[in-house]
Length: 320
Picture 1 (cartoon, helix red, strand yellow):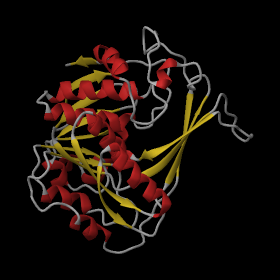
Picture 2 (spheres, one colour; picture 1 turned 60 degrees about the horizontal axis):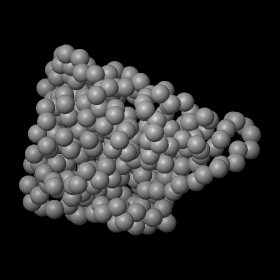
Picture 3 (cartoon, helix red, strand yellow; picture 1 turned 180 degrees about the horizontal axis):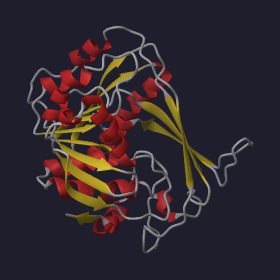
């Protein structure tokens, strides 16, 4: 069991509403409601905790939603390191609608229910509504650094997940990565990062559009020689170093996606777990992609069944 810090500064109290059908501009009545702590950091931390690690999440919390997130992390066995602000922690709404809803679908209840192939189920639709969040208090970056351990080797892994909230010094990621000397450091973000931060990382995971934006911001030389793992939703993923493609990975094609929210965070957590286990980056990424794909078959973010993960793993194709 490793000691892992997940930096997820922008948590959310998530509500997932399931509809038999959904029509924009009309009254839509949900048939099911689930509420849970979410956001990229909490999603990744939740999966890492499930995989057996001792996990801390660094976050900014406020208001009743912040209290709910704090209590949920405690229930999940995740240790919270946080700064409290006056702004209410954001609420996010996920609307699941169409044939992919959980009614009558065994995968949505965490059971395969005898269905032979997780890649052959009917499609649904997902709409995500995200509230804004802005920190008004000065000095939050220093406050966050103040709750972290001083020991540079305290954590075995550090995961940087998501964006820096508006109003927070975006050099916070640099400061965190400078403080610690973990075995593994995984960055799942593209804003608030300097070439120095990128150079310290074991690998950087982002989608292709974010990589293009990062390259435009820093210039081709700014991305350095770090290993980049690039995703494209359910499309082909790539491994790059110094601008050269090392490998391509093709996730399984899912004819049904119950909820894609949190799939990328699940990939990040799986990748971190298997890198710590000593797998090569390509294999760690392959396992992470299988976990992320499995999470798309569950109505709640960053949740998946072991049966779906194991069934999908052989379907993740590695191409040299």
